[in-house]
Image 1 (cartoon, rainbow over the protein chains, first blue to last red):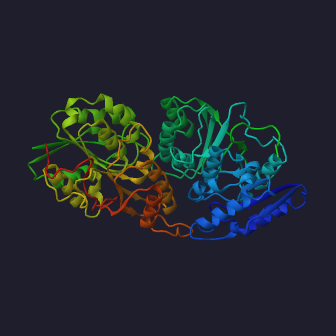
Image 2: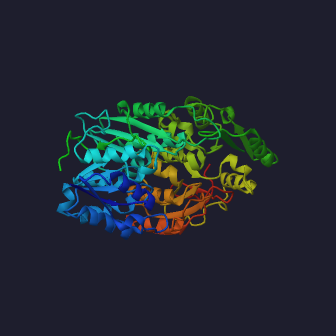
Image 3: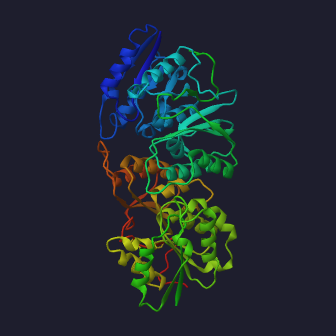
Length: 274
Length: 274
């Protein structure tokens, strides 16, 4: 039995999405999902105030009966609790996987930096609402059972990490960022103008010198602008990588979509170590 | 006679704005404006490609017959030419003022870091199109003539610098950022959601430890979101300043509007040194 605790460090989870994930996995007697009630809380922009979100994360992470903590939603807010969370994590937190992406990258980064558990860039619970969202959910479950079919296909013997581009740009140089030297760093973005993507690449490539290389995930739902930017996302990535002396390694199969693959931070394992 | 060279490191200037500024200053025989033709160029998102924008800036800055370089527009693009510009600046560049804000903050930062001339957060040529834009233009001209009425009112004997919040967030930790320790740093923002403002404050306050304090300019044209953020811009600024051990000093009279005041980087002088 794999017991999975679910909490929401940023945005709240809508009940119908939780129900849909429960329904999808109802017949799987190898998996038990436990939704922390904080998933459904609301406080301004967030799924509960900072204290509520921090406490829910700590309750999930520090409970030895859980094998994994799966983040419910992205949105915004994980950076407001990550620094406080790390010193309050206990021994039980070390033997877990932590799964999610987008805004949850702040927590994944901080956990990886602290050497606590296994940070994993992976679909969120709330991705069930996407077209093909079932696939995203089942990809996570399969990985937790030891499957490797959902891993990002370029992963090899080089350590890796994956981030939303804005999240990574806000992480670099802060107390939350792990040492990514020697890592393949993958980035993806959604709903940002290409001039903003260019600006974010300027920033991250200045900070990430020493990484093994960069891979470009999907840059999706780019808003229409009043004038074309004049370069594609790949041209932008190549331009700034070359200026920063960072090897550009090609594409990564990550993004804000149902095909978002799994990137364990550090070295990918071929079978679940739980 | 004050001779002012105008170029556009980011977005192009519309001809009607240039004409309006010329008309406004036509009867002032103490001022001569020279619009570099690059102001009106177009290349994708930019007022000409990187080489054209870089060369125009260098021609303006390195011409000893000019007293000041005034940036035409913001937009995006100054970060793509600032690092290459600095080592190509000659002696003539050192005795000039460089005026602008928003995206031009990358160049103002790099010039201040290099100790070249006087970087000045100030209205742009293109601000003429704003309601009350005449006032913004005349504020710049008055300062260039030695006036002090347009200076940001809180300026005192502490060195200062002022930036657009996103620009500063992209600058911190890069090769372009000057040492701002001991400076009062003022920030303003436009057209960003409050969650984004919060995220940007997280990032800058992690990087700006050691500054004398932070002042909050106007956070304007905040887009409607599907839910309220739950904190005002001042509450956001106070929150992150307190977490970062940075004194929050109150408001600053800067912003994307016609009332945007003048903040010379470093120590403000009470009269023009030209």
